[in-house]
Length: 443
Image: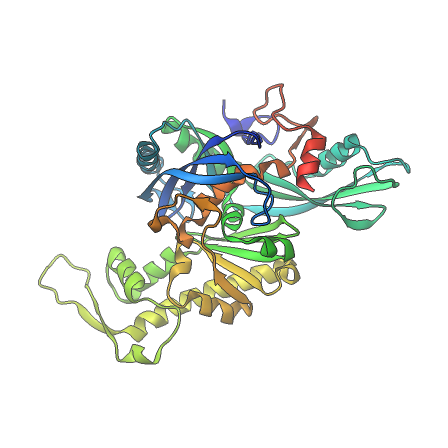
């Protein structure tokens, strides 16, 4: 039976980590450019002022990555191709770690990720707030978000209110007449998730948890002050660009557009009439999002499309490359700026934006983003994880590292099914920590 087809929201739910013991976690980042499998050992750590809220140290003990095939703009276009790439990436990580993977935490970028805030209130009649009341108000908020075509990826209480007073982190034990909660719910189309699960099952693996790509990359690349004060993480992938907004320590908004680094490559291939792989190489070696005075003088050799080896490369000024790249990058950044503006979270984001993802490595990208977004921009590299090989320390591996970090924050989410906090796999014994425990850790 499919995990996504049950009568609850139906997605597999992470077991909360025990803060007392070590765990081995395997993750899979399926992107339009590459597929990455990481295996990590999570060992309990003491509370520290660096990355507070992290309960474990993460050490990567196995990693495998393959060029993506069969994926367009985050969407699975060819099941066989994706299955074989997944097998190769997992196999390489298993060999390096010296162990076998059975289940994985997977990211999802496709399925038109939605982000909504639902508010619910319950009557307390002047009584003290008990854990049962919290449960009731969370269920009420969760039930508003249930749709047949969409599955809930994350549901995070972003704040409680008592008698209209907002911004209460933990109302337990307080008195009031009306208890309210704001619940941020991230959803995706069920069909996209089913196809994702199908690919993984065909490789004889199971899905342990599903995380929205923007949430994962934000977890890996943002520092605590950014997460607390308000910040946007923009993950620039090959086929998709996703946005996550964090504030007061929580994910409060996500969005995605189907444009990424691969679109720059195809623009170059068309504009210079050269093959896709040659265009990609030109972009990486000579490409820039910023014009430079020397670009008119610098000449770049462009291999023509053709079978004849005698065809001479065409000489073009570097300025032409820059013009083609800039047009697409500026269009993408303007779209992102408008999306942030439209979301209503622009004031929360403030002046802080962090860029991650492979496409953020293009020369001049931070400067171009600063100009278009009119905000401070830095490139975010994955943090808080040991054992990464040098090649995997860049922004391109943020999502995979974020998936590694995710189990430590999974218990901040509440999953309210028809009859209360439901068990992740539809069986009788709830794997979720008791409500009081959950509240203590979350707020």
